[in-house]
Amino acid sequence: MSSFDAYRNSFPNARLTRSKTGVLEVALHSAGSTLVFNGHTHEQFVDLFHAIGSDRDNRVVILTGSGDAFMETITLDGFDFFTPRGYDKIYREGKKVLMNILDIEVPLIAAVNGPVRLHSEYILLADIVLATPKTVFQDKPHFEFGIVSGDGVHLLWQEAIGTIRGRYFILTRQELDAKTAKEWGAVNEIVPAEKLLPRARELAEELAKLPPLATSYTRIAMTQKLRRIIDEGVGYGLALEGISAADVARANAS
Image 1 (cartoon, rainbow, N blue to C red):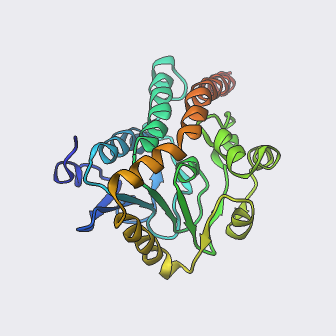
Image 2: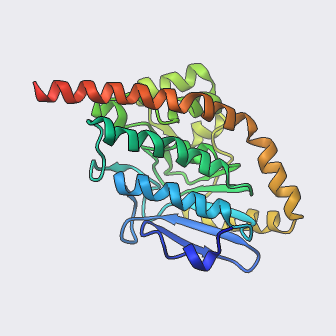
């Protein structure tokens, strides 16, 4: 079992605070501003979500971003897509991070503070999704790099908004605004930016008043289907992503 004091300052790209009632806020960031995703954060978030899920004193978790976006920039720093050993690391981390989010066995609220152009599958594993009017969703970098969208986004968007809409979203790199995302079932509420975290905290504190086993087991019960989807499909998707990355490497080398 994790202790909050033991891990609260262990993650350079996650600012962690917890209320007396057990509401844990997780703000992803790079140097205090909007997160820049890379191979180091990819590795770090595996341990981050594991630590959160292992701490029985967490009653509700709020996941949010910093600055003007939740996550919209990625660099290849720390990634090795193009060797078997390098991609094996990506493959293992890509599977584990999603299961570790699902292993957070308390209600998870995503407070989406702005654009999400990569790894929006993290948000789709939350139980409640709040967005601002400036929030947009997109799967941007996979096709820009010439690789398959195989890290879970291909599965969870089809689950959230329907198979035809989900496949269109991936294949066209559709930019989905908050209003449409709400109409299609991927967002619960749209609130002004200045009210985003207050609303998330309001919901979280109400959930924290309920008996712990009731909220924990409800989260477990409601995410069993997602667990099956991730377990059955992400490894295969990441393998296909790896094949496409190898093809990019071959093309660049010729």
